[in-house]
Length: 375
View 1: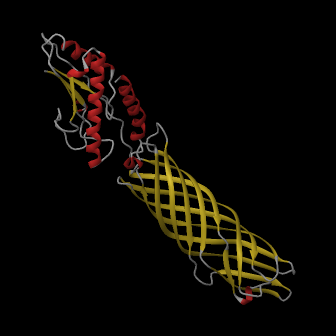
View 2: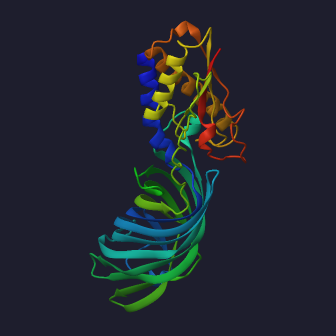
View 3: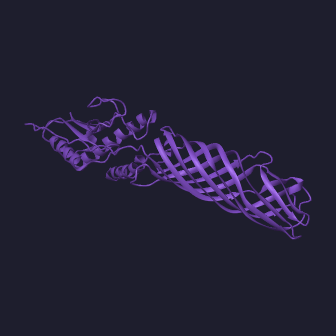
């Protein structure tokens, strides 16, 4: 019995910090992040006057290393759903132009900047029985990005040079998969990791292609198919509306009586089933009183207030289990104080029969109790 009680107490102590961390956000939050930006090869379509050394009108630009950074402001609705607005900057190197009739070397870069609106959903792992400070999330976003190609030159082996440049705004969209890791002892602060798939669509004719060859300088248009990027991001998020720490338990006052009482109250901290030092003293008084008054049975009844570490119907079930764990802790202490185990009956009543009537979802210290009744 002592081993079982110790295991219950250890489980409560380990789980409590995780439960205190907000797995879903209610209210405003800010988020910043940055990481690696990998752009897929892009198909470029050149007008005849901008072909340069190309026999056809199509070629393929290959991207190299890049990076991304963003900042966002959002609002969490408390049910896992979040809405945010973000500003983003992307950069990527360009190091090759392929599918051309004449080979050459390419050097250049591009950058994108703009804003998107994202809708995200946090997956509360506590709903699956996992009390860990990690919250996966998924999301989608849409917005508008300006794509700017810095002067990107291709020097072909036949001595000609092709240059790409220009800026265009386009519709952009993204899919997001990530996870938030709550930082211990800093409510509201979390480290985030994300993978983002970003796509952009382009209209015809916005970019310029310039060809420098033996016949002189020619200028035309360069069009692109859709642009796809893969981004791997590390970020930092802070939620402003964090739950306050549980209030300290009210002092337990047992009025003096000329004869031992037949009912004793043991109070608990919020979402805890382990006994405080004062609670052990009260249990010891009840155990001693059972030897001085006529007692045939001892009832140990556990209760909780109507707040819960998990909201909704699941919270009612959770509180019922918590009241049983509190009653079991008191029974184990009575046995340690010399009361026979066979003389003790335990019951858990959850949120029912409050000592102090309150409104819904209220943390009331006097309702978090176990009643020891000598019969």
